[in-house]
Length: 280
Ligand code: FPP
Image (cartoon, rainbow, N blue to C red; front, side, top):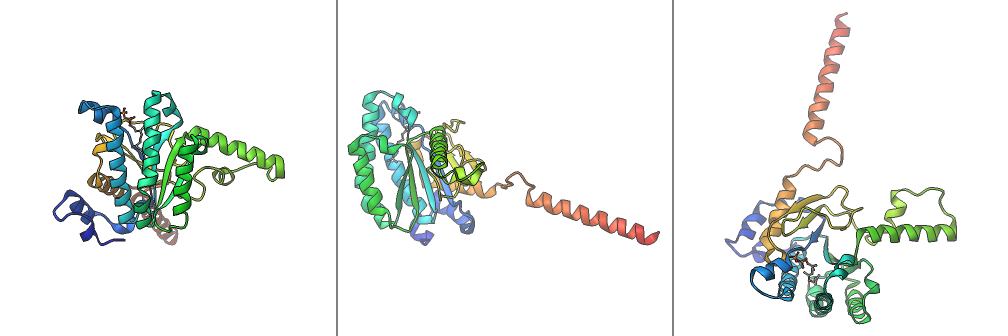
């Protein structure tokens, strides 16, 4: 992990937040629903394309900050299957931005030892996009630092459908199982091998998960900010991590405090009953 002093400007909000974080308890995997590019542009009387360009600048900031502080996996929701419903010019512009990103950012990804990975039906995208993406994937495949996972042409329901179809195919070929469990299904998700997200961030104040990583976020902490994605910066990211560290993750069990109190009660009862029996 890089020394925070060289990372965040002295006296900045980010530096103050970083000083309050426990570096031993950073989320391993952060997933982000980047929302609000259009609204950011509208508020400035700019075309939506300007909002998406500003969105890419925010992507750069967040990717670099996550890599610097030692996040293992960062997943960004870049383009959903539903995004095809947008006007053709906007879809084309988003594709152009994605191509630009994977080309221009490659030296930065290499410098930070970042391994790029795609999830979604991205192989169905136009050839030119696919080729640029494949080039970046190949170039970063041996990098051992943060995994940058881009959800591209992604839908969580489609991911589950694809996994079930893959299961059916395997079954027809090998007749391996009579029943399948979570492990078998998980092994066929686009995210196989990745830890589930610990923290899901959504910008622009919407309280929805928008068909994103539905299986994987079963126990994820959700953090929503009213800030629009182009405004999101390193201090917002660190604030989200700080808030995450204040939460108690129970996974359906008891909190450590409740568990301790309960075991103390049980011991107290045992002590009372044993003293009663010894008195009899
Ligand atoms: C949501 O804003 C944003 C998107 C649909 C696209 C996100 C894409 C980028 C930030 C750029 C490319 C990404 C990468 C990883 C290089 P919106 O258009 O839905 O905003 P609105 O809800 O305010 O209209």
